[in-house]
Image 1 (cartoon, rainbow, N blue to C red):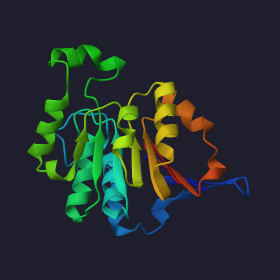
Image 2 (cartoon, rainbow, N blue to C red):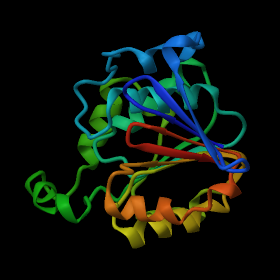
Image 3 (cartoon, helix red, strand yellow):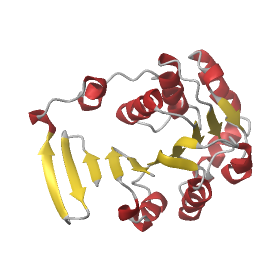
Image 4 (spheres, helix red, strand yellow):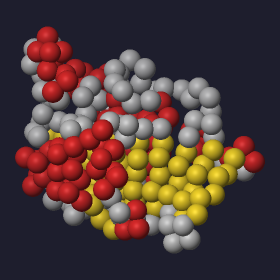
Length: 226
């Protein structure tokens, strides 16, 4: 089953067994209170000072997931300045969660960021750490300054939530998904950011939806439940 949320407060539920689509207007349904801000026109951004391409609703989605995560760790592939990192860490902080949260990024930028990274001294690591410290979230994050494939052996525990937001080139997204998939526990969540990018979309198109019990979309995040 796939659940798709759009900005018009509508959900599209795709039942693959029955091969049919059902559209629900969420205005006609009572929404659980903990998710109400996903449906507000202008939800509050908790980290407006942290630059990044994550929308507030996407941030709130990551925040809610981290608040409810069960046993296992959280792994973020691609942190940039730490906007998504802050949202996830905030959820852990507020619910006093003890899950390890690994933020993996070499902090040299993807191909499209090379000129900018060069201007700030060749690395975004100091900016990333400054943003975490500025919001008092540093103790909830374990930074790993490596490429994702270099860091894979650093994670020894099962992953409850994997957020893939590194290079958006097709081969890189595919490599991140395939190499890290086996580390995600059954029932764990794998989320891909920027599903509107060609490389990310191509990987998602290749995923067999019938292999997963749940799947959904929050703006440009697509998630699947293993």
